[in-house]
Amino acid sequence: MERGNEEARQKAEQDARQRTAGATAAATAGDEDAARKPTDLDVIRARGMVLCGVSFGIAGFSVQSSQGKWSGLDVDTCRAVAAAIFGDADKVKFVPTTAQLRFVALLSRDIDLLARATIWTLTRDTALGFDFVGINYYDGQAFMVSKKLGVKSAKELNGATICVQPGTTTESNLSEYFRANGMTYKPVVIEKVEEIGAAFFAGLCDVLTYDGSSLYSTRAVHAPHPDDYIILPEIISKEPQGLAVRHGYTQFADLVRWTLRAMIAAEEYGITSANVDEMLNSEDPAIRRILGVTPGLGEALGVDERWVYNIVKQVGNYGEVFARDLGQGSPLKIDRGLNNLWTKGGLHYSPPFR
Image 1 (cartoon, rainbow, N blue to C red):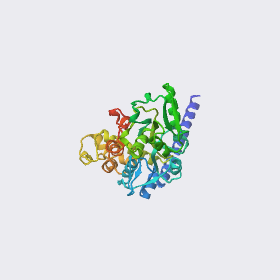
Image 2: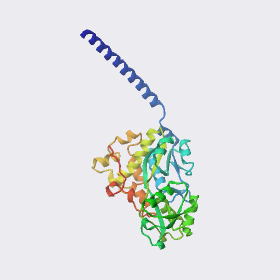
Image 3: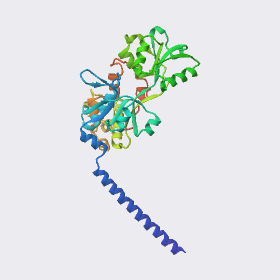
Image 4: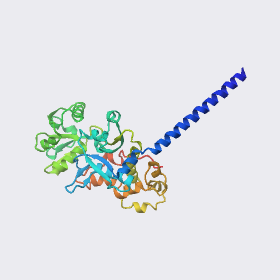
């Protein structure tokens, strides 16, 4: 009986070894095939530029000047990705796309990266054929009023007339907020986004509600006298603006994800476009890893070891970019708020670079 058990055990072990050997051979062959097949990052590198989907014009996020130069937070995020891949932030082509066609542009390969004030939701992340890889701006629905109205809080808007676009989450959020706070309002429903701001500034409603970033942009660009209007402090919804790539673009997705994190980490460690050369001599092990003085992280992503150095030197850390495009150095003058570092009460936080 014992001999029979021993023979069965030996046979089982031999079968297991054969299965392991077969699996190893198959995996090796698969690795060899993968090595011969160009990766998603190889395709972009061979093209010589990143194709970045942006808006046709949202102040602070993506705007093209009369000279053809693009600027904004979304634009600088794309430039940072180009700096990481090519060592040159200018190796990016900006492809304007509408809200209706932005997802089609990504799936049809007209763009590699969608950085267009796009809200990250569960259904968009799971059902549309692409992946969100990071949040470059934490937004939320807010309210803008004329200073003449004399209110300082959304809780004071009972009975107000409010301009809102129909059939949107903005409309449903508005209804839920007022109902939850025991207030009433009169909606002024306007279908076209570009007409809502005009109606508000013409005095057809007391309040304009939209994503906070859009309100700041509308005030800066379209208000006859921007200083006459304020955005109230209440944020009544979560509208995180994410970066999206095609599903299956694993290596490129990793690169975009860690590019955004690199901009955040650089701010955390005090690495700026002005001092990054000096920081190459830092004795801090974390800074040496981030800037590629200690090699390894670039190889892990398939790019040059100085990829973070190139991002910061040519584009800046997250704080520099925010200040330039949206903050006190811009016409919008948006407070950092949730877009501050986690160490300063915000939500931006990078996993360790190691």
